[in-house]
Picture 1 (tube, rainbow, N blue to C red):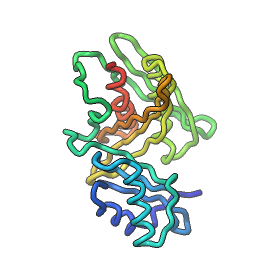
Picture 2 (picture 1 turned 120 degrees about the horizontal axis):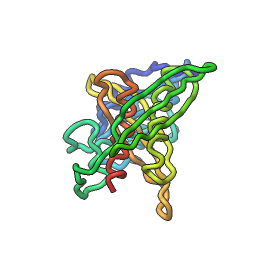
Picture 3 (picture 1 turned 30 degrees about the horizontal axis):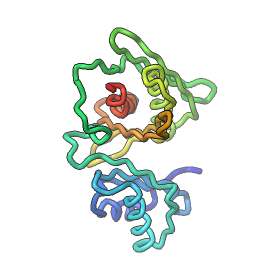
Picture 4 (picture 1 turned 30 degrees about the vertical axis):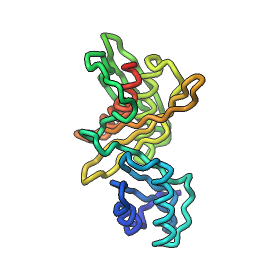
Length: 220
């Protein structure tokens, strides 16, 4: 199904909700929402943000929104800059600890698929990751995020997967936002979020958003 944006008035109404900074509503050809992506502050629980979205949809537009199509990315209201992930842990991080640095991203096409290879370097060692998927701009951020996460597999040491990765317009700036799910033994799933401003190409920003999500985890 082709994703369209036929409800700009719904997006505007969501941006007026306290705590919601940005919203993107993807629709089908019938103008019914199929995906709702929201960037919110950190004061409300994500479930409450989803309920706010459902309430606005029903009260103002007579739209019955399934909570499963609503994706919420929360950035702390006191974050110093976009990409800050200080909400993951409150204990101080030793900035002297080495962190992975992005060294290269290669995007090619093969048999109709997009193929991505990512290389990272940390403390003199090089780690590589690979991912592929359907060709098309809508799928590319997720494939790049998956390749970046693949390069981090050995460093993380636990199962991880990309939940969502996309480029959003936040305050008239393009921002790569990625959420990851880490499966921690005996504790279950942990969701991490990272973001990065698009300063050059989107591929670089997506990879940096993955690193922003996991850096504190890697720092111990």
